Length: 233
Length: 178
Image (cartoon, rainbow over all chains, first blue to last red; front, side):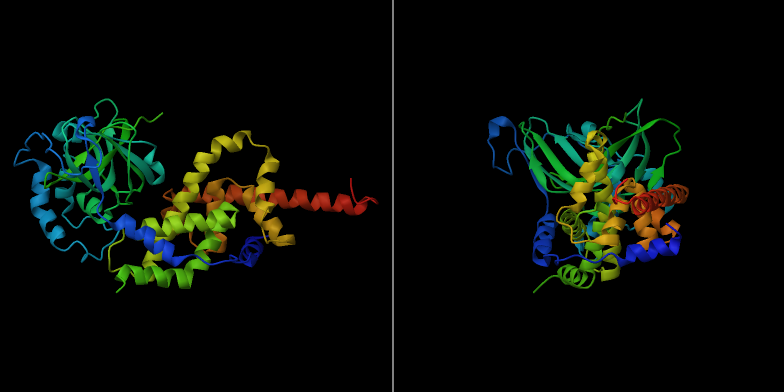
């Protein structure tokens, strides 16, 4: 290549596509993704196809837990006007930095809060990953509203080293299409496009592994929770 | 009545659809695969974007989604490419392509670069992005972008020199082959 201008010229000489995109197909697929994603939580004995069955047995949350506090401050307003927000997918946190960090470092573990296990099915480093949810025998209805990333300590997966702010998660609303797993109580969210928002550091120096950060609605209660660590080689 | 976001999709596809497919084609080397990649990226992006977005903003998200998908597919295909004979890549590029002559050569040269090198070259020299913009779009550091660009340019120069040397040898040879 004789020069950068020559390379630019040669690249720009390459012609455009032979046929056009199907806009109707794109709109239809996007519509499907925009519908609320409801994962039916059914134990083997309850039978398939029933969305609302017996409620989960969920350990009660402390009224002062971070997720509860966050929801009372922000969740209600966003719920009231979910389509009014024009900030979009990469909206950074609008909350004060210190408060955001404190909240991001204190998301409860989904396993401890609900008995549900959640892990990435592949490395989320490229911005797209599946999330597998393993649900307990108790049946109920779980809605996954958004998926982001947290980094947890390899040696202590309950310790959050860095995590995305809740506003990033709320803005993303990105949960992909749900695909029932082969086993009862297993649900996989396939190819979720993860939000780009920065991770807020928690001031902990430790080797980390990515874990899904989930915004869920369970029995009418919105929670931001952290799943289990993805094994990083 | 169509939702606002649907109008943005229609406008984006009408005005920038060809440019998006061309961008994806330069990355993937295959127009059909590129079209799938763009449709996926559009559906995923507009499946999560809220109302209030204009075409330009939406296009930036779609381009980032295309780059993510391309790099993701490249990563998943890496294992296969390690064992596939090199000629396999050339055959895939040639089949069904409408490119001829120098344009075909240029597309083939791009395919000799690593996925990240290719993405950096396309963004820098076809899309006229700055190093910082490329870094943001690919989620890597500016230093890494500079390194990929430098390595890719060196590879392209080497490929061109080898091609010119081969051409000169063929011209000197009476039978047209060496």
